[in-house]
Image 1: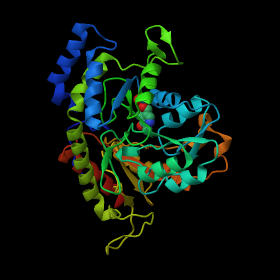
Image 2: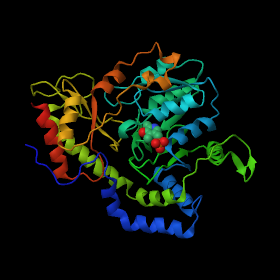
Image 3: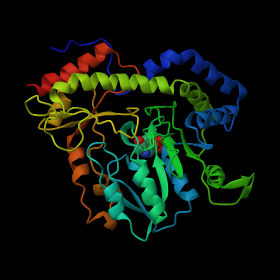
Image 4: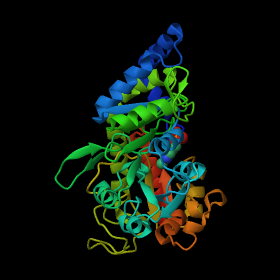
Length: 401
Ligand SMILES: *Cc1c(COP(=O)(O)O)cnc(C)c1O
């Protein structure tokens, strides 16, 4: 039987996380208010420099949110109306929204059933003479397989824009063992500091990263109305700045990012272990639902598969269900005051806003299946064993019925 815990369980516990760094955060906020340099204050430059160092990238360009970051990246790369941009169908809407918003053509392709990340074979099939860029999304906290994506991009002369909103801090591991931080591998990377992201601000915030000096310069102009110098508008821009308060908060939290990732990994390992009696061996690859070891019985849950070429920062802990009624499981958990979420319930190609003839003849068997069978459990930095036990016991109780 699962024993109820006292703490209010949430998908993300931002208050618990804040309590641990309260003194530092409060004084950082106070400093900005006292200085009254709310826009482009020193905290923005300081956070930018700290993040450049952390990521090992030449340029970080702070901006107002992760959606803007994607839009600014595509503007800076000079993508033109009608250019085709290939991205994953199984992602948060912003990726596709920004492509469509700029009058580009979002060519959505299916994902890999084991990692949930964009399927390389599908990218290759979708390339046409109009293709100008690929936007891999590092979904749920681990990197898409960048090496073959870079090879395709090189062969077809395409830009690579990495949507790193869910995977800040993850390492991509190249075949030769070399590592690079997610978002610093392609031409440009974008991220979000939305409060529930792994490095969350206390409001909206985002950034772009690049090693390309000219591209960085262009992004810096675009975020600030396209100005090269004050009142000289060289290119079309937007107003998308990171405000000083958010930068001050992020600067404090960045110091803890690796320990946050470790806490998330610890919770993920607890989940994996607890679900192992019902689950596919975590190391087993392939879409099959057969057991990889000798144990009998039907496999009911697939725990997240760790890709061999990426570390995982567990933005989400997402199960794939097999023969388990998802709605009923969700209800069962809710009755025990355990929240759960469906990321993502509806494939983007079938959303009215993003319907495009280019995707009409395409099929998305993996995305369709995932949208119908995934469920994400509470995942954050403050999950203790008592809570994890209560959650996993409750899931197992339902699945073993
Ligand atoms: C959150 C997110 C975004 C958008 O970030 P915002 O800061 O909310 O605008 C873009 N892409 C992905 C994959 C995301 O998860």
